[in-house]
Length: 475
Ligand code: NAD
Image 1 (cartoon, rainbow, N blue to C red):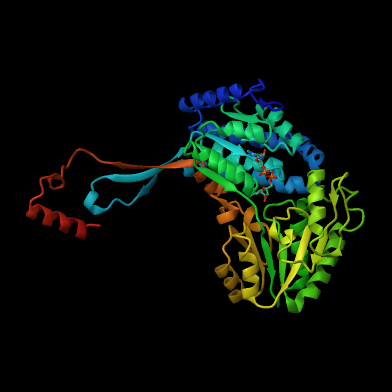
Image 2 (cartoon, rainbow, N blue to C red; image 1 turned 120 degrees about the vertical axis):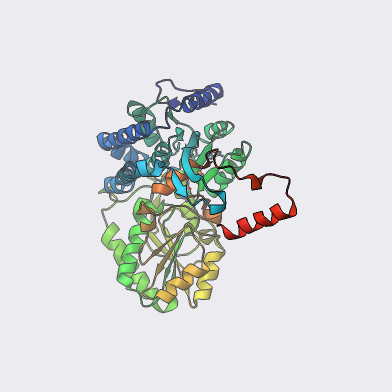
């Protein structure tokens, strides 16, 4: 292996042997129970908060360097998002760590039953590039809150952010327990040969399968935060201008490189043209001439991704936008119609600023289009009528839903976030992240008095009948 480093302790790890050594080291730190207590968790979360606040300028610059991510977008979707997750964790940590007492049936009393959330142990977070800071650190917030030792593997596709994490975090966090490993597929594969107690992965379905398979060798539980084609259904009767503005905002933030971005729009035929006109007006207002020069619109992560999007564009008629330049990694906000459902545009996750708009006549037709692509990560429905959105929610399974808006289902810290079926396994954010990185341990505690002699064999018929009555009557 070459060109990868493990940082934080100051010593860069260069070989597979060093990765192995790191894993052994983290396990011994975990076994010392150093990370389990409230004080350590609180201190690390506060230090992470300090990192985000004190290194804000460096973060803004790194994400700009990686793909010209606009400063406002970086602040809201990465820095502020993470600060909120930390605040929530700090506010609730003591309560989350408390044992939860449950009912003990009368027939098993006297005794007390409860469960505790214990740290998993040594965990691995493999991040995608599209929200490079958020996806490296939001699972880390949950893993730290739950008292784990942790390896963070940022995406090599966003090298400036990965370098900042690797160089920067070591000055803030306990580098004996929390490490950043830089590198690509080869490094991730090498990490996955070792036993972790939980693997958290954000990325594509294709790599998600590899991660799941590698983790299965150690029977390691995984969380897979994957992508897919999230639809936005626009029903007649909705406020078209508001719907269009919200769709454009959600689609073109991060230049469409968002896992919960509306991948395509399904609009009822009667309002198709009105919606197309409103979408164009919204694009002009938000991303009109000069927005690229002003740094108000993100770039595409690589020339290869621009070329992929250029190919996808061939799958429909361009209504607006369509401009692109691979060298400067730019693709204009684009709307397409006349899209065949069998074209690659509708067969793969777009993950860029191309928005196919497809008309439907009946709700059944819309449901069939969505179902053909597997369970989406997000489902968006614009309709003022409850029976309409309940119909779509009832007939389409998805990780999350947002009605009459978009993206907010992922921004509310108390809502669990994750996919279902092809869009992922498991959840995080807020308390659900803490639970993901915890193992629930059940405890039943008894005294040695009184002693119920009925429980022990031999069981004569009278004793058996008595026991049956006891079990039937005392819940
Ligand atoms: P990716 O699967 O290519 O890479 C993700 C991570 O896996 C990276 O750290 C990469 O180094 C590593 N990796 C790549 N190939 C590997 C291999 N062969 N073996 C082991 N590790 C490997 O994904 P990406 O391009 O970084 O991200 C885009 C995808 O992520 C999209 O599908 C998007 O929808 C999804 N995504 C999902 C969420 C979510 O929360 N559900 C969030 C962001 C992105």
